[in-house]
Length: 333
View (cartoon, rainbow, N blue to C red):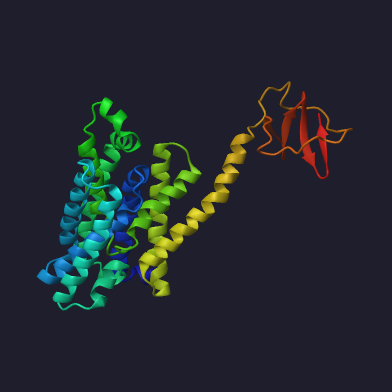
């Protein structure tokens, strides 16, 4: 670890990964709420056009990609709002038009496929000090409205009609969301890559939704997962000599897969609250007796009876008794 941190390029790469992992889920939660999980993919393809334009003009890739990506995102959102095109059609235009324009301009500039690949899948060695400063500025520009306007943005994403009745400028907030998403996609090109950044916007949010309840809890949990997988993926890619974007996404999918059994365990614990702390009832629930008659059905989380935590097991209230499964029989008390 100390050897890795001794390299300046890895210090910059890890800081860029940390910022990306923090910001991507912060805006991704609104994208997921609007059911536009593929928006990041479309914006990533439009950002390729920005990279191609930067290669053609000899400019810095990130600023050009930010401008091009914002323009494309705003155009598609306005078309959607004005009813000229559906969201899916707008995303398709972003996919194919941006990719084609980027490849075309890159070819005209004389750059090969390798010139684009480092932006498509990320590259640790390409993060310069200037890039890191720009990423930090962009991260602040995204994080401040994403957190400061969280109630308004969440209201717009959840129910636009209700948001209008509250007097919120729905059109402005919808445009703001896609602009913040465009900035996020562009700033992630050095670490995650343009083709995989959407996964970092969506998967941590999906994992957080499995684990916690409530908007703010989901937001904080998603940002924590994003930082964990982004920094972990960047670190692992150094030792595995692999593209950081791919490893970051694999780790994110792994966390999402683990969130399912953890969520099931949490649901089970919520369904079985502790016994009340009344000394007359909680400390002595009475002796356990083996039920004389065959039990008519099994007790579990879905049986519909009240579940009570009792020591190392769970009792289910049924016909005036507490029933607890033990081996091949049920105890009652």
